[in-house]
Length: 492
Ligand code: BES
Ligand code: MN
Ligand code: ZN
Image 1: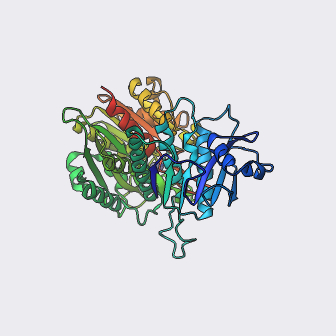
Image 2: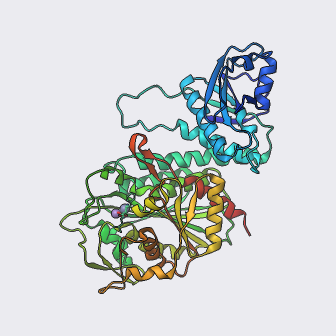
Image 3: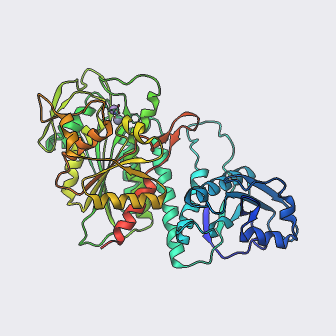
């Protein structure tokens, strides 16, 4: 799907479909009014009992005096309440209607709406991301494709072009590509998307965009002393990989941003086996790693002026004769020892070694991304990712980027008071802290490995995928990470 920014008039635009907005109370937007005038009131007449409710749509065909074959009216809700959420709902509704329609091209006159204090570049970004999200499909594993690919090839964003808007467009297209990659990797089942598959995917990106790549094998990790990571991979027939992918777009003098993504390609829980119901969803437990690959792809594709190192520990968490057992004690790369009281708390075990390894890149900041705790889903549901940080400035930067990207986060505490829950009688710490504050004690565990770093942790257990009928990866938080990297590059 191609997007182009081009000043057009709604009545004269030669497109398969012209999309215009209407507020509650039949209040036409300026573009809708122009169509109505050109059609000598035919649009208003056709309104009937249209409510203008956010996300509602009405398709009109063959309006007199209008060049486009079809006009799609999209409800924007109350004019006074129109903001980010309504804009995104309207784009989504337009996309879904266009999918049904089968138009080859469309002009999206929704983009000229004033969305709070947002600049027009914000509209461009979210129009592109919303359209691409709605048109994403994952049917590569079905032998009978549901329907032919939707026909929409060209979308015009009717604004008068300038370099800021062109940058926004390039950013959004690359972000949509990166998000789609993360979604597809998440959706692929664990018998296809193995640690080796993730490594091959990273190698593909390295070739395509001339990125640096290094994949550590078990031997390498043994030599380094990554006892925690290797203890998780022990019972799997799939070899563990530590994937390092580097994009160096920033100034030489500036330290890189390091992104660490949890890459458990399947989480059975190990000997602390999970219940059978919905266990299939644990194929999404590599969504953190997928979001790092998606972010690197996006930043490299748009040639962003920032240097990023992606570190992705990847393995399966399986039961078996060689599996770690509750009570086992392992020595981490940092030298600290951990008593594994629950083998299902494996994310923190692979991350603690990856975070210790991240220090080697002399990072400006480190952000890890992980489907870490069910407790985070209980705390924040599927709306916000959990944000934890040992540096408030970094937390603020991430929150602002998240708001800008509509890929929200909510900060949770990392107070020392919680650390005592990780006490162990036999090692430096236990890998679980009991039921209370489960996502906080998980973050506190990681904090013990990042004391010398400016570090933040994103718990994406509730946001990386959807369950139920709409089951599938969301690609979050690629939009947040790309926005964060770009905003970060602009600072100082
Ligand atoms: N991958 C899971 C977290 C998870 C569970 C994400 C459900 C999304 C939905 C993680 O490895 C895990 O199993 N965490 C345990 C930790 C517990 C044993 C302390 C959990 O959350 O139950
Ligand atoms: Mn687990
Ligand atoms: Zn897990």
